[in-house]
Length: 178
Image (cartoon, rainbow, N blue to C red; front, side, top):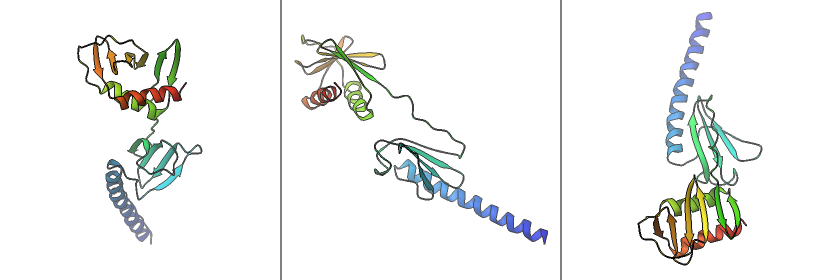
């Protein structure tokens, strides 16, 4: 009788291990391609900013940009690991902008990404226009100067031309954070 119990428990344990491997493989593929895990239990935090998916031997943690009801693609950060994994978002970046004797800080994740992408991904060359620096933008201890009259950004002794749309995007973000 004891032998049958041990054999039955062993079979159940093997089935759970194989099921855990299969579901982990399937869900890791879904998570890496930006889709929601399928074979998990979904638990939303009280404030709705963190969603944890518990699978068979693994978990997926995602931080949501707006609400947990948004599509899975609208996430801020996702990490997959064992049940014992901890995951917190890195400290948020802050952009400081000085203009007309005022200083504002931009904390909104989307606004930070927009400004960061415009400033960091611009092609800087050594030609500097004679325009007036209208805004001083500080990101990660790097100083950028916005020159509205030339539609350019100055970084050190180099400058980059930006489009009217990018300039308007930066100014709109500054206006909304006054």
